[in-house]
Image 1: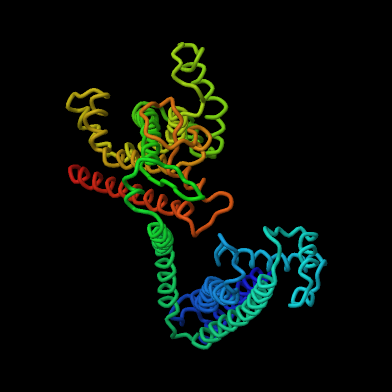
Image 2 (image 1 turned 135 degrees about the vertical axis):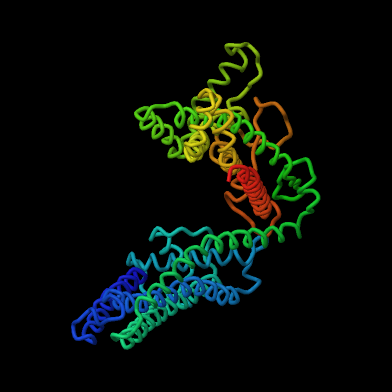
Length: 490
């Protein structure tokens, strides 16, 4: 509620600042807009942006920094004796936050008063029961250190929230006042506003880069912790994936990497020919009416959630393959014992990737200059020869990029593999057997009760970082191919 209130207040100040700045500029020119350096609206935008942008920047920074300060302060209050064997300080802090939020929920439901929630000498059992009666989730019984830490957490969070509201409003008012005082007929409001907008655009462009850097660093630090507990040689060069939270785990990425690449290759063998042929037909042979119907229908596949594809693989494709290749199947081969298999996941994933390949390839083929087609046809080439020898070579860089994008999408897919390929990590060339992938194992290692001090949990970050490097390599290779072949047609 506090955040919504402060955002609405900032928006109201910006609106008022716009009209105030515009009116002051016109008043300084005695109502003659022609005497102003900039249009009247620029003066209003200047006051509104000066009030809004710095205040929003402070708000975002405060929301990012305050939790770090509160967590570090409260974490230092927890004695080592309050940390049970097999746990760590991070898990205890999770329980502290859960109790703090539970106290807030109990107060909101009327089962606790603010005085009772702040009472350091409260009856622990009665307080625990009150939180459970209020529907709050507690994973363990509340201890005295956890209660004190939760109360401190609530106090610091409340104080910080109040201070944030005051500081953000002060900054907004000071910004509006500063911009309002500077407003006069000679002020270059247009230049200031355009420079401010340029800075905002630059910031927006930087968010994606900063987010990528943050993701990489977060995975890198946890991966370094993993390699302090587990041999990197076993991870990269071992041959067995057998996690055991009781110790003695064998955590090699190679069986998972094999399953990932195997399923992705099958998916691309399905998606690339069908998608590319569909793109050629839509761009070169289909009439306008056919294209207007077929292309949207084809792209509907891209909007289907992957969990639906997983259900389709589990309930339809898998049993169909078993009835064809399994014991007593139509072919009587006995190759496939279960619907969970590499082939099942690969076929369904390939269907999912068809719109990625077809839509991108269609746009790329349409971008080939019509003059190249006309020149080929004018020299006596047939339609098919023109497509094969002129259009496709000219569009090759973009088509390669589309295929590699589909490959990256296949490597990162999770739900279809979970429901259709099984969970067995092994080396096998048989597409009718169950296997698993890197993404599936990441989900498995981080599901349920996790101990972030164990290599069996931290291995998920090493797997994620490796997967990131693989997809980054695919993208770099795609850029290399595009640049190499594009030069031939520029």
